[in-house]
Image (cartoon, rainbow, N blue to C red; front, side, top):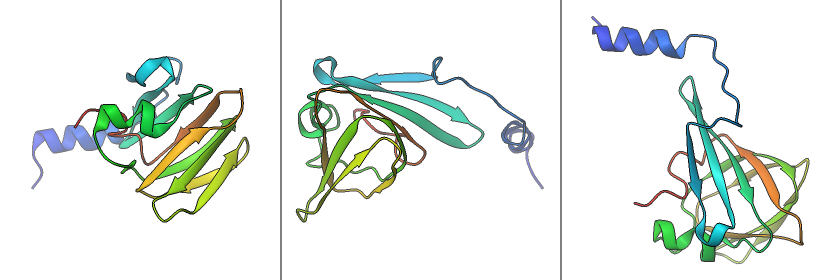
Length: 133
């Protein structure tokens, strides 16, 4: 037997939905104006667009917000523009650029490359990203 609240929630997640990223449900700015994440929830999925300005470094512009030694979010998504390097705690690193699909496991630092911003869409890791604990 399901409650009225559960039935309402199931009905909401099964409806066709559209939300423009230009009108996010929430915006979380990074320190020193180095970018932001724009969050929308569609169905049961939290999706985000990350805008990382030139000079953005996770350990300088997000670490002070969340207070962890490395990024503890797992990110899966697609790079729309620019470039970003992700470095794992074990020292391995990969550079991602426009057109790349990615998976970034927890336990990393990251930074933009060059004088162009990096813009990406993340479908798994922005639920609590850049949000104070």
